[in-house]
Each structure stands twice: as C-alpha cells, then as structure tokens.
Amino acid sequence: MGEIQILWVDDEIDLLKPHVIFLEDKGYGVSTANNGDDALAMIQEGQFDLVFLDENMPGLSGIETLEFIKNSNPDLPVIMVTKSEEENLMDDAIGAKISDYLIKPVNPKQILLSIKKNIDQARLVSEKITSSYQQDFRNIGMSLSEDLSYEEWVEVHKKLIYWELELGNAKDEGMDEVLRMQKTEANNLFCRKVESSYTSWLRGSGDDQPLMSHNLFNQKVFPVLENPDTVLFFILIDNLRFDQWKILSPTIGEYFRVESEEVYCSILPTATQFSRNAIFAGMMPAEIEREFPEFWVNDIEEGGKNMHEAEFLEAQLQRYGKNVKFSYTKIANLAKGKKMVENIANLMANRLNVIVYNFVDMLSHARTEMEVIKELAGDEAAYRSLTSSWFDHSPLLGSLRRIAELGGSSGKQVKLIITTDHGTIRVKAPSKLIGDRNTTTNLRYKQGKSLTYENKDVFDIGNPDDIGLPKSNLSSRYVFAKEDKYFVYPNNYNYYMNFFKNTFQHGGISMEEMLIPMITLTPK
Image (cartoon, rainbow, N blue to C red; front, side, top):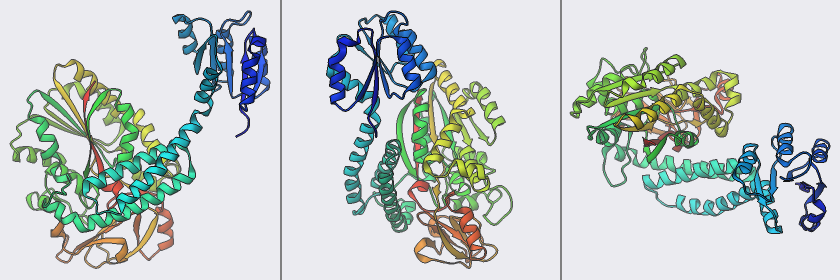
C-alpha cells in the first residue's frame, strides 16, 4: 500500500504544525488548507484517504464543507474536529456521515487512533482474523485426528463455517486456500464417520445419537405445543445450509431473539422426497411407504414426490395425540409468498402453522440450467450473497416481520422455528457410474439393481432395509456420493462433467448436506 494521504482543514492550521510533523514522522502524507473552499478544490484535484475538518471556520463552515465533500466523495472518511460538544451540532455532523469526531484541543494519540480506526481498521482486522485462524487451524487439525462424536463433528462444522465467513471478510486468498484444504480433510473424515455410524444412529443405540429428520417433530416441535397458550410457526426453508442461516441471522435478529441455535442431521438420501417426507410423517421412508402406499411415490415412478406432506403431518399429530388446530402452506412462487404475508393475522388463530418455502431449492436447481444464475452463484460466498439478497427482498421476510409484530401485540406466546430438510454442496469431482435404464437420475445418490461405480467415492448400501429406505425391486441398492463427488455416466462423460461441475447439489454425504440448522426464536 502506498503512503496514506491526509487533508487537514482548519482556519488556524499554522497552530497545528506540530501535529502535521508528528503524522509525517509516522509515515503519512499530510496536505493542509485553512478554509472550506480551498479544501474542496484540493479534494477535486487530488487523491486523499482521509480528511480532518474543523467545524468552526469563517466563510464555508465545517458542516457546509462536509456536505459538499459527501456529495462528491461519499466514501471519503471525514473526521470532524470541534470545540463544542453541543448535541445538535453532533447530530448534524453524524447525520452527514462523519466517520469520527475529536474535541479540541486534540493530542497526537487521539489523532493516530482515529486514523487507524478509519484507515487501518480493515487491514488490522484482516491481520487479526488471519492470525486467529492460524492458531485455530492447529486446534481443528488436532481434533480431526481423534475419533469424534456426532456433537464434536457439529462443533467442527460450526468452526469451519465461522472461519469461512470471517476469512471472507478478511479477503486473504492464501488463508482461504488453507481453509478449503482443511474443509476437504474434514469432509473426508466426516464421511468415514457416517459410514461407520449411520445404521447405529438410526437404531438409536449408544450415547452418540444425533437428532434426525424423522424425530424432529417429536423431539422439538411437540414439546413446544405442550403449552396451550403457544402459537408456533414452523418454517422450513428448503435446501438451507448452516452458513446460509448465519448470513440471514442478523436480519432476522432485528425482529426475533434466538432461543437456541441447533444443528440436526438429515437422513440419507439428503434429498427432498426422503428427508422432508420423513420430517412431516415422523417416519423413515420405508415405513412411510408401508403405512401410506397411496401417497408414497418411488424415485423411478412418475408424479410429484412431496405432494402429501400435509396428510403426513396430520397423521403424525394424531399418532402422538396432538389435537391442535394447524395449517400447512407451501410457497413455491412470489404470488403465494405475498398472499402469505396478508394471511399471517388469520394464522394466529392456529396452534401450529407449518410453512414450507421452496425458494432456495429452486435457486440451486436453476443454477444448473441458467447461465445467469451460474455466474451469480459461482462459489459458496456468491451463493450465500445471492440467498441473502433474495431474503432481504422476499415475502418471507415480510411474513417474519408480521409474525413478530403480531406476536408482540397479540397477548399470545408466539414461537418460531426456522429449519430445513437438507443442505447442499458444490460438486467438483466427477465419479463414473454405470446403471441400467431404471437407475435414478440424482447426481449425488443412485438407486438401482445393477450399479458399477468407484468404490472409494461412495457409501454403498446393499440392503436398503438396513437404513429405512424403500426399494423399487428386490435387488435394489443405494449408493451415496461422498464429499464433493458427483455421478457421471461414461456416455457423454466430458459434456456432463463440465455441465454439472461447480453446481450445488444434494442427496449425498457431506457436512454441508447433513449437518443443518434448526433455530428456535421468539419475537422481540
């Protein structure tokens, strides 16, 4: 970085010569002006990184000069120097977007601190973040060498997301690459954990037992409904990763307090027709197929596979003796989303309101089809940014505002659960697979009876009954892609490899797909 250029504007600038010399000795370039008109001309002609501006000058006042500076250079930091602490003066200055203010007489330490706060802050913060991650890198690496429990894997996942977001702010490409390597190692080891533990997780044996899709309502929703005065909104945003939740969290936090921020485990396949049906039925997919044969649609069959979630939910409520008035609403387009905002007041009459929002899922699928979306969501940071931009302008945020507003004035105890059915991962490594014409089409898992694949790339389940999954015929088996792999047939291999590479997919095994948010909130 070149020398920082500072403009100091004061009608008694000669008296400030010692301060100017002090700053020059510290390596800053300092130019001076003794009135507002000269200062504006200098700013127009030169390049400055920061301005010290006297508030009380003859002619063009400090506040007037500030307004001109901000009109022409809105991003130029201005530090107001004043003899007065009058509240209305400070209100005017702060309203005009000063970066800081100092009270005369100023001393060198105050000046230096203000410069560092406004010029060097980004660099100092970046260096601190990088240094802190370097220290935690070793801690995470040591923990990965151990046999981690499910809860310890959740903590590793949270830590890696924390550093991904922090390093994104620091913009240190070297550390970004180190983090990507550590995430890859962690996902490799997490896949081994799933391979060795998944069947025991489903059986509920042992202490290392995650909350999973089919137990979500029984363990997290029904206890909330025990209080007869509670109105619960259960909002499922399809395909929401934990890092995406962390991006949305500050906006939601303007209206709600977070009671708990939990991570639960999606069942396999991490695909909507399995995981979401399991949530609302409170059953594993094989049991749903047995109990509701008229509603279950297998992978290779035609027809919508998530068309009966309301019926599954009603049956689960009855099975557990929860005789509550409830609603189920699925939002799949903008018009339905706007209608939902208008209907929130009516929903307050129900004990339970389930809202399924499909937008994030549509976004990820659209990304493989639309070049514009591909460009907008080229990596994880862009994908998060796109999700955040959608949310800030979505009817979903309007609905949450309305829930918070009515929750604060209704006299009822309103609670909100925000969760998802599975996450998604950016796939990078193609894996060849051969199957017959009845093999399912998902890029991250396959069900079929004659499958040839790379053993190292998959978690293979020869008997679907072992993990609670239905089978299309007696010899069906499931294979799940691990880490960032995606299945490609040898026919037209290069075309499909390039077409799907770096797209966001789900159905397989990764921390991003399986370790997903479940947040409980109350209105402020």
